[in-house]
Image (cartoon, rainbow, N blue to C red):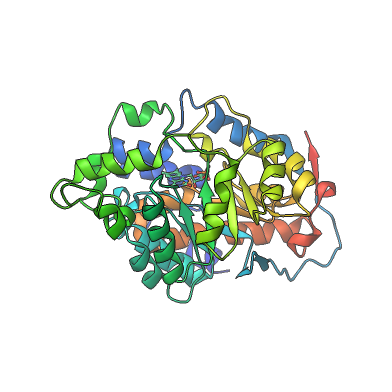
Length: 378
Ligand code: FNR
C-alpha cells in the first residue's frame, strides 16, 4: 500500500525498485572507475552473463488455494536468526562507492535484522562496523593471510567484536584478469581509507617498514602479497578451527567433490558461488552447480548461494534448488552508491518485498515449502 499510495522511490528519486534501472542510475552517477569496479567481471563477462541466463532457464510453477496469505520467511542459519533467508555478500572497499562505506551498509542491514558479511578488504575497520551494526547479526569474511600472526590477529579482533560466523573465500587467491579494472585502476577512488582491516591491525603493521599512513601504496602491495598465492591445501583448514570457535563457511565452491571435501573436513557450511563471475571467465553458472551440490551435502552442512541474484523470483529459485539462504552482491552496492544507508535499505526492502509477494502468489508460505517441485526447467 505504501508503494502504490506514495510511489516507492526510497530516499531519493534516483532509486528505482527495478534492479536494472538501479544499475543504470549508478552508472550515471559514478565515475567509470568506481562503477566498473562494481559492475565489472572477469574476462569477457561470459560467467557473469551465464549467472543470469541460468536463472532464466528455471520457471516457477505457482500453486493455488494453498493459504499463503500470511508468509513467514524467517529462518536460522548456523545459529543466526534472520527475518528472511537473505544476507549481504562481502564486498570490499566500499568507500569507493560512498564515504560512509561499510558503516552505512551495516546500519541498513542491522535495521532489517539481516546479517552483513564484512569483507577483510573493507574500508571500515572490524570494530567500526561492529558498532554500526548495533544489535544486528555479524558475519566476517576472511581473505586468508599467509602470515599466521596476521591471520590470528584479524580473527581474534572479529571474535572480540562479536562476529559469530566466519566465511572463508577460496576462489580469490589471486585476482582474475578483469579488463574493467585493468583499464581504469580504481585505487585512487579509495578516499584515503585504504583497506582498513589490515591497515588497522597491529600484527600487519609490525610487518611494514613504513606505516600505511606514511606509505599507503606500499602497505596495499604488502597486503596483496600476504593474501595471494595458492600454496595451501585442504590440510590447512585446521588452522582456522584453532583460531575460530564459531561456525566456518567456505565460499566459492562450484564442484560437488569440493563440497564433499568441505563437509568431510568438518566445515559447517559452503557458499556455492563464482564470485559474481569476477574470477574464472567461462566458469559454469553458480546456479547450475547448486542442485547437485545441495543434493550431495545439504543434509550434512548448510549450503548457501550467491552470484546473479537480482529479484525475489531469483531468490525463490535458489531456495527451491537447495540453498538455505542467499547472499546478495551488486544490487546493494548500487544502492550504497546512490543513497548511502537509505539506498542500501531501499534495495534490501525491495528484494524482501518482492520475495514475500512472489512466495505468496506462487502458493508458498515458508521457505520450507519450496523444493524441486516448485520449479520447471524451461
Ligand atoms: C565482491 N565479492 C567479494 N567476495 C568476497 O568474498 N570478498 C570481497 O571482498 C568481495 N568483494 C567484492 C566487491 C565487489 C564490488 C563485488 C561486486 C563482489 C563477491 C561477492 O561476495 C559475491 O560473491 C558476488 O557479488 C555475488 O554476485 P552478485 O550478487 O554480485 O551477482
